Length: 599
Image (tube, rainbow, N blue to C red; front, side, top):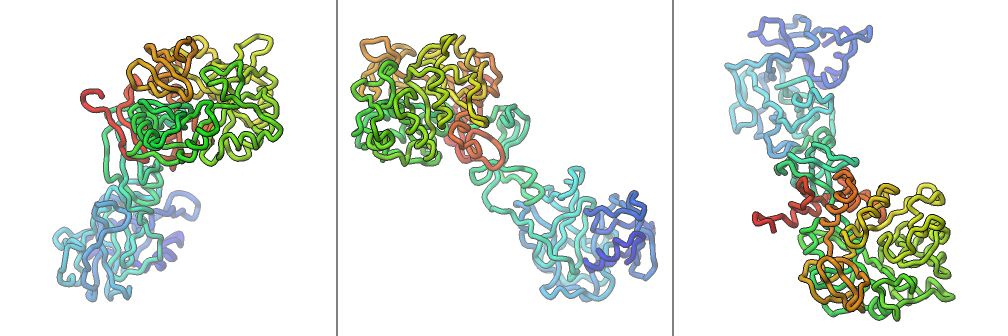
């Protein structure tokens, strides 16, 4: 075979094909060679030119550069081997793949072997079972590639493909050809298999709006093996398709919420040392799924060293699942905090840093293996040393329950602190001459590349809506919604515990018994998200990211949590337009769904 530009000679010889006509075709229309996936420039660099092909009879004819009007098939020579049953083509899901023709020897049969127009009268379906050898010149119709077989070419060619086979190897499709196959024994170069990288089922969530790149996008969500899939790689590299499709009924799909400050709930107090502490963690992790929380940090308030020594070994970092939300590590709020701003923390348990500051901390906690966050007061002596040591160990340092001024807070940030515990609460109030810790939101002394995050209890009790708006407008990318929930969350009003203290629930207010000192909240995370969006007038995207992306960024896990980016964990929620949770998914598996009664 020869071509005007020389391209056809090398490629056709490489593939072992001869282009030819069929005796029953006299229109002079011939398909392009099965290499149209590659561009064939003409000599002058313009559009592809015609190709001269040798027919079975030896005559030469010009082949148009593009011809897609007809279906074509492959004539088989006299010595063509018997067709073998067609196995499942790897990478094509459950749909039938192209026919497998050929022998292990790969020898070319005698006689004309080429691509010719399909003859309807002599049609035989390849791979349909045991059939006698085709007669000389008989034409087999090639099975059309499944829609799952996508080309690696432009998107306009996705629905067209050429599945070429050498023995049992499935080759990449050509974008411009439709209805082609290789004859038995034809030789072709070794190409990589398009077998999927995994046989795990692929789930496609359709009819939804996905929160991705800070905006809701009308896209489908693809999930496999607990991870978010890139559909383009799935289509073009793996030739894969969905095994299951789920209609989301126009729901919002957002990353699962992450609560980095939760003291307990549903009758469980994380600051109480009990023999069945693990069962308490399991109960809370299961219950908060209905409120959209897929990961959390169990929080311990100021306690005696014996409590830390008994409780912390029972907290282990674990992934979420049907059993409940994932545990990211403990948040230790105290005991190295200010007496003046102790809040609901018992004063007799407060501690200071002595000569061996970090060793004092280790002696108090016993172990830091499962610790994710430590809240301390930065004005305490030797706190800078402790902040540096904690930061070296990958532990987030938060500033709170403090009377620190702005310069002390800035120094703590320069040593590694990155978080503020429940902004405005248990700290000096904002003052125009010295804004204190609150001033970190607009400070120009923050190290380059560092972002300070701050927790907000958006329950309508701890922070006035005006203060919430001020903080959000001053530093929107650092706002992290937290619940600061106590054991009474999810229960009726009454008396409950918060570590060493007894608290009373009066409506949405929680006080230390006999006082008007606030002690945590009974708000759930989805309630905080809705109140934040209503109070600030921010976008839906902003409200959702304050409970997902921002806490993930705080903990340095945004590559796998708090986002729906490709390859991240498939922890996500389905919500309606009013931001009520309809369903919760962890690792791509449904772990909670609202039933018909709305429960």
